[in-house]
Length: 356
Image (cartoon, rainbow, N blue to C red; front, top):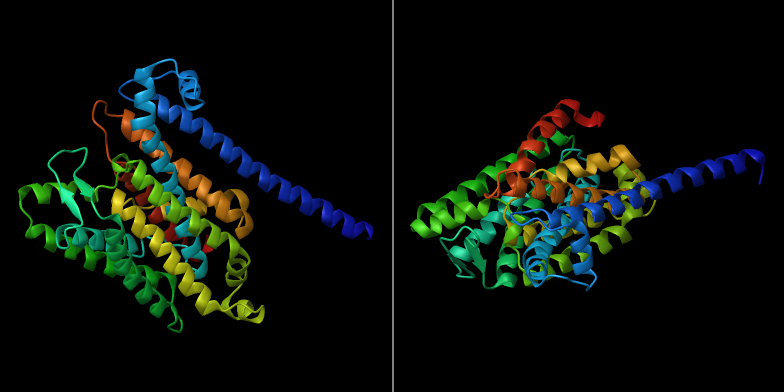
């Protein structure tokens, strides 16, 4: 190995180590934020007591019940949902080569929400209540998720069809997404029009995305789908890097671009469907977090996928914690804060265009 080759290898090793350092720092920050989020609320619990309870050394039965039955599933749901939405966004942006792509901006979240509402109100897979804490209870999560996935997949197929049109631009795909989102929002409103008072109030509240409504059983189902998707996306990380270089380049490297694009969008749609089915629509997480990750660790999907899911989990957890404490004793739906954060960011990305 020549001196020049040795210098290049040394710089590459430093470059890689720096990315791993960023990822490790993000994991540590996520752990600290998890402890803080569990400790704050109507009843403040000292962080040290939270750690003791989680490690099996609880000193208070009251705190033990609060942490294990209320706070922990709430916090873990925010982490898993944030990671799932973020990784769905980063894959969509890559395989569509569209910096504005995300489940929310492409209308997939709205389609999944319509599917879930249709399943609950027409197919009877859930029960509606007048209580704020459980506006909608999903009694058949598999059917609800399946119906939500079908409608999300319908929009996915439409988006992919437009992506194959020659001279298609990111702006055109976003306009198609806006049209699809508007269409399925109108469909949800159509269902609400024929609902009774309790159903109407419950469904309107359910559309406000919130992570507090998931129980341990629902969290387990969401986690299983998100973990399976993360594994699939990670196994295909090199193919996403090739597509980033252009479809022709990817084909020259032996990548079946159409199949990778179709399977990736289907998997991202499934993640979106399962999250929307239980938590409602949580916008802009899948749009913002991948760009935040790119600013920190670059475009290489070997690191970008992990970085995006860490930032997505951290962002949604922080937003949920802020929504819980900023108006005590009332709790804002986390989707309110993510929309406030996402709207100006979305406008900024549109103005920047493809120079991101």
